[in-house]
Image 1: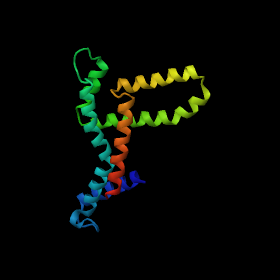
Image 2: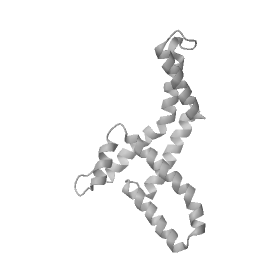
Image 3: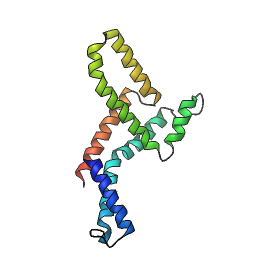
Image 4: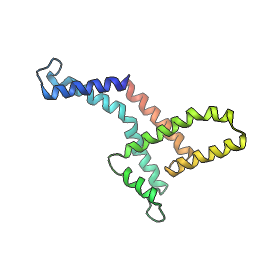
Length: 152
């Protein structure tokens, strides 16, 4: 998988940084390959970060007036280097929603299902993403992921 290859390349790059005389380390090919693979894997989140920042700014997510403590903390975290982790968390929530939504729709009555659906929408709204923004984010991330997977 990509993660296994990524970790192995980083281990090789670390060995090359310590001892350049190892085979494959001349010309820093291993280091260049590990950086290229890192950018390819992380690029969808970096692209989503820039577009997400614009979306959240337009919605007033970072406005200080009337902002809850939660929004202030998320805003502060979003402006640091761990900002792209915000989109990884959204991806995890979307994956959980996709995994659980089918079985839940079969097991619970329709009125409970609509309540769960509005609860899920509330969670994403608390993160600053409505349904349309979430769908747009998923499509943009998929397009960026496909384009950067075909490049290397």
